[in-house]
Image (tube, rainbow, N blue to C red):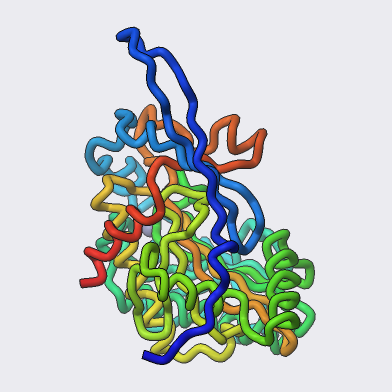
Length: 349
Ligand SMILES: [Zn+2]
């Protein structure tokens, strides 16, 4: 195998601390907490190992589908009502008003978050349980998103900050159970756009290589958190997770989603469904997905998709954002990323 240039291990910083307490039994005990530094952002996150065996409400089995799952007749994303209840694109972006790719249908978001904000349905299936989607529906939907973003780019070249996101079920922020992706493009970048754009450009100037490409190469050599590939995408458990069971897919050397062919989207779809199957095996039904890009020729920000489990959408579950995350800004998860990778590899066999 060709020797790969990798980041120094010092980039992957972690420290273990102990909390000493007297157990209810009267015994003295130490509880281990790991503080890890995200090599990309410099942010710290914590792994509170003692909570992994805690009985978490609503996660002893996969929760039942939400009540909305049985009401396609009331869903504005189901046919035929989708064609009269959803808005249409301006003709300068697409003359048909809505874009199709296979069974996927794309139209503007009725409640936009930015200048260009669209919704892309996977197909006409009203409710799909986590891990049960048809791969082709994901490929079609992603291709539809990319085609929309290409059209936006032609129509308004200033809208360079682009993203594709997913909220699976309301616990992940989804307002509709009908499976879909959100597509965004704006002149004004998000915090992550701005930070990652600058961070990757600085790295590129310093070493003439891509930041995420280097990160992925390091992780592939280190093996501990490397899960596997789907085509060009390298799948890894995040070293310092800021979400439960956080998994990344990196496309080394690729900085634009405009350049991806259908095959690359197909490979991303394959991995997304494998990660969903992992989440399903952990009895989790809610998750977020995100992929962002800055579409300028000088961008050094390589494509990196992120998936994280969210609290289950079920009665009486506990939010994954506690006072610790909201007020202190450090995510506390319970499972070592090396264990997440080990569990995920089973779905890459
Ligand atoms: Zn529906």
